[in-house]
Amino acid sequence: MTTQTALTVGFDLDMTLIDSRPGIARAYDLLAKETGTVIDSALVVSRLGPPVEIEMANWFPAEEVKAMADRYRQLYAQHGVAGVTPLPGAVESLAAVRAAGGRSVVVTGKYTPNARLNLDALAMRVDALYGDVFGAGKAEALRAEGAGVYVGDHLGDVAGAREADAYAVAVTTGPYDAASLREAGADVVLADLTEFPAWLDGYLG
View 1 (tube, rainbow, N blue to C red):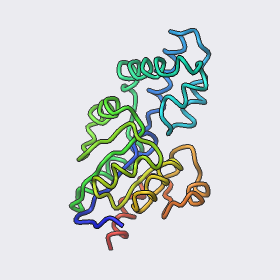
View 2 (view 1 turned 90 degrees about the vertical axis):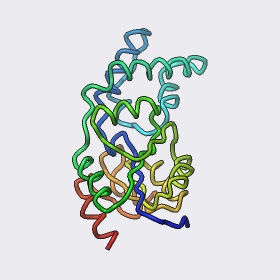
View 3 (view 1 turned 120 degrees about the horizontal axis):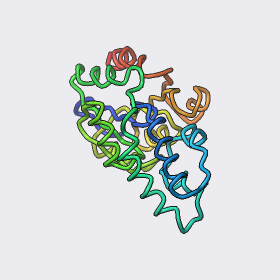
């Protein structure tokens, strides 16, 4: 297990810290209009977590997936950042980590420049940002930052925490319920981040 010299908490972004569904749906709707392709954006935002290319493969032929993913990211940067909001307790959770003398790092599957746009637009200050990583692939960033805790809403987030030997805190604000997150190996499941500051207090003892 990684030796911790100070408290470092990793957070996922979409549906953990922020509700990005309005912006993502807007970008997919614009892509659908632009390409003449039928895309169910409500379905898309019900299953956020994996890289855009995986979702894109549901709507476009394999040879178009990369170009469409790139175009989606452009549309999101231009039209998807507005209307995205912090999830309940997110700002307070980042503040709780700071108050405990710790560092917050965001480790997300989201395209790094767009993740930065979201954080900046919401004035959410974090100490490091790693994008374009998913599932167990998040472990490398968590290890590099010495994160002892990782907070996320997806089964892939739990996998990343476990792979990094970090304490896996799951929230049910994403596509999975508490039972699914526990079954995946979450050490603790919270309803949302409003419960995180009190949990952190207890965790630090």
